[in-house]
Image 1: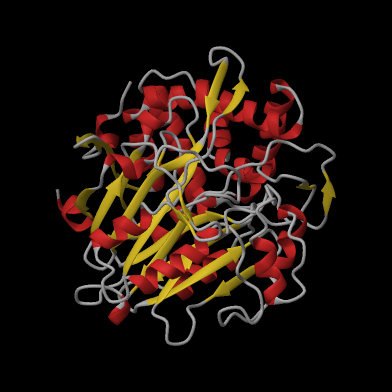
Image 2: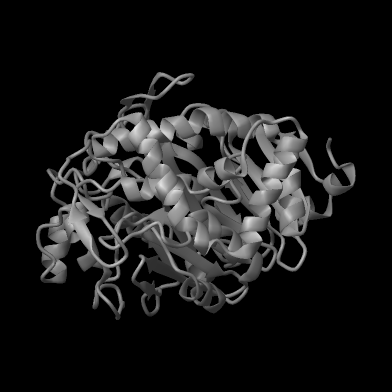
Length: 469
C-alpha cells in the first residue's frame, strides 16, 4: 500500500512533451517517491532495457546473453561496497516505493540498474579490457567499434554573451535501447541536508549525466575510456548526485572525486557560475587529473578523449593520454604534435570522435562575445567535421568513429538479439538530451524530444521557479 505521507508533495507532470519528476526530503523519501510514482516505468527498465544492455555486452565480449548478464551482476557486486550510504538509501527507497505501487522488482534489480551506464562505459572498450584496478589485459576478441558521444562547453565574462553570465551547454549521447526514448525524465530534487538540483535520468536510476544546482554549480559527464578501470568504485550516477547535492565550488567537486574510489574513465566538466570558475576533471580508477582553462581564455570545452597531456593548453600533471593509447589505438603520443596527428587518423575506428574538441574551439572563438542561448543551440546542433572539412547531412549517420563525427551525433544502427520479451532489436548512438543553462539564474533550455534530441527543439525552464511551485 502506498504511503501517502511519504509521497508528500512529490509528483510527476508534463510540460510540453517533457516528463518531470519532483522529489523532496531525505534520500530514502526521495527514493520512495521516485519508485512509487514511476513503478510501471521502472518495471520496463528492469524487464526490457536491462536485457538489451546484456545483449550489448554479449556483442562487445563475444559471449551469450546469459554469460553477459552474469558479468553485469558481477560488476554490480564489485561496485556495491563502494556505494555512499545516502545513495544506497535512495535506491532502497526506490525499491520500496515501486513495491508499494505494485511493481515486481527486487532491491538487487535496482542496484544492478544503477550500474548500467558504468558497465556500458567499461564494456565499450574496443581492444583493451581492464581486468582489475591495477593491470589491464588483452581481451582477445575484437567487437564492433563503439561510437563516441557526449560533449560540453562553458563560457563567461566577455567571452560569453549578454551580461557575461556563465553559460554552459551539454550533449548527452547514447544508444536508444528499448523503451528509453519515451522514458527520458527530468528530475527536480529538493533534498534535506543538501542543495536543490535538477538532472536528467531514466526511471529507477538515482542519477546519470549531471545537471546543476541552486548554488549555481554545474557538472556534466563525458565517456573518457582509460586503461585502468574497474567496477570497484563509484560511477557517473553516484557522482552526479554527490556533486549536485553537496558541491557549490570547483574545489568541492575535486575533493569529492578524491574522497571516493572511481570506476570507469570519465571526464567531468564542472563549473561554479557565481565565481566564474571551471575545470574538467578526468578520472580513472587510479587517477584524478584536473585541467583548467588556458590563461586569458574564459571558456572551457570537453569531448570524449583525454586532453590531460602536459604542456597542452596549459595543463600540467600526470599524462592521462598515455592511459588511452591501448584503449583507443593511438599511434604516437611522444609529442603534442604526433599525438594530435594520431587523433586525426581517419582509419582509427576506435578513438572517440576527437574532432568535436577542435570544433568547439572553432565555434567558441567564432561566437566570441555572442555565446547567447540561440548561438549555443547552434553550437550544440553543429554537424561540421573539421577533420574532413565536411558537414554531415542531418539524417546521415557518421561513416566511422572518426569521420563525420560531429557535435550533433548520429551513428549507424547495430543489430542485437536480447532474451525474451525483447528479442531482436536495433540501436544506434545519437543525442538523448541537450541542455543549455545559466546556473546562477536557474534558467535552462532542454531538448529531449527528438533523436538526436536537438531536432525536437528546446524548451525553457527555470529551476528556481520549479522549486517554488
